[in-house]
Amino acid sequence: MRIAVVGDTLLDVDVSGTSERLSPDAPVPVVDVRTDDRRAGGAGLVATMLAKDGHDVTLVTVLSDDDRADELRALLPDVRVVAGPSGVATPVKTRVRVGEHALVRIDEGCDTPPVPSVTAEMTAVLTQVDAVVVADYGRGVAAAPALRDAIAAAAAATPVVWDPHPRGATPVAGITVATPNAAEARRFTDLPGQGVPFATDAAAALVDAWDVGAVAVTMGDRGALVGRRTARGMDSRFVPAPSVTAADPCGAGDRLAAGVAVALAGGADVPDAVAAGVADASAYLAAGGVAALFADAPAVVAVPGADRDALRVVHEVRAAGGTVVATGGCFDLIHAGHARTLSAARALGDCLVVCLNSDDSVRTLKGPERPIMTQDDRAELLLALDCVDAVVVFDETTPDEALRRFRPAVWAKGGDYTADELPEAVTLAEWGGRVVTVPFHPGRSTTRLASALAAVG
Image (cartoon, rainbow, N blue to C red; front, side, top):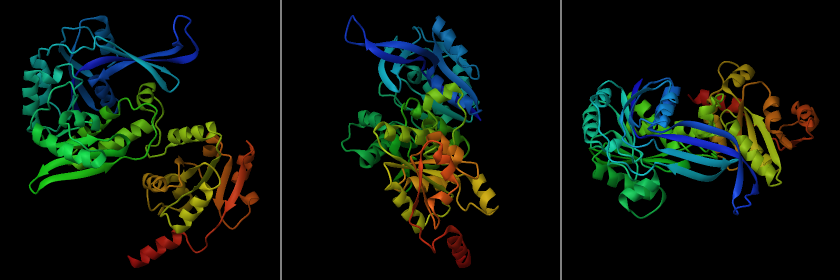
């Protein structure tokens, strides 16, 4: 798809290292730098995400004439950059981290500049695309009158997603959807309340105040609340987010806005497009966020509780001196027998990781008609159970390689056999793990349930 990203572009620098001592000059940590990673930030990050997804992306922005602007262009090799003059130095945001902990952020040239001038080439881009994302970072691009007029004209026939900024411009009337986060929505409205009730009120207020098609108030790991005006009045739709754990949420809002724009360009209505954006943002965080995006890391199964999330849970439990328990299976059509077995397994330790057969693995084991539910749905249902802490999806017929990745202390399995008979016993013995059987509940099986449903059908 052809997508235009309009907004402010910054240079983001991530400095990571270790710290084992304090400075002799002051009681502050000394960071031994290990990596110094640079990337296009702001609207440049949104453009990068979309380009990595394979879309034809044009970044409409303003740039300085300094060396850092040249660096930004070099950091956007797969993006067409149409830029006017900014008139100020390139803004730089440097984040310093020690391990997974942020230490400080250093901003250079990030004061709000004057509203920049706009070229005819910049506005012409908006007539040639399938969707527009406005990534306003409060530096004036989205406030430029000529560009606002061009966005308003494009919105009559093209989906426009506006990600606003508290110091930025008001979204142009008539756009498809604006995506403020909850903190931004509070600053825009000054409404009381918390959670979904607040988001519902804020979305309704902003739809009217901004005169836009819809407002999706994003709520972090909870999801988003979509408010839109219909012929029957205000419609509010809550879009839940899959459960993921993220060390660094940087870029999640950008990922969501990009996903919404792509879905709208593909013909989705606003609630479904926001659901797609929420899913994209969750998968992005589960895969490691911005660090994985720029490391060209191998794809992680984009379901809640993928390997990275499971390993984080395991690490935290082990660090606290807890016991890691694992179990496994297909879990196709979860029934009472599954729930009882999983609950019993969780009682053996301090967290329960479920090794889940992928769709291909289930077909190999049970034939072409299975699974009944996809691995995404099966993982989501498992994670909805209080007794399940994480899910690892594996493609092999046995979970041995998955088990070797996180080495649980206990492998629990329900069945009418002894622990020594379980094939995983040999694998667990490699690191001193133990195999335990938990109560088996005869008469309850997915096959029997599927047959009963087929008979009813």
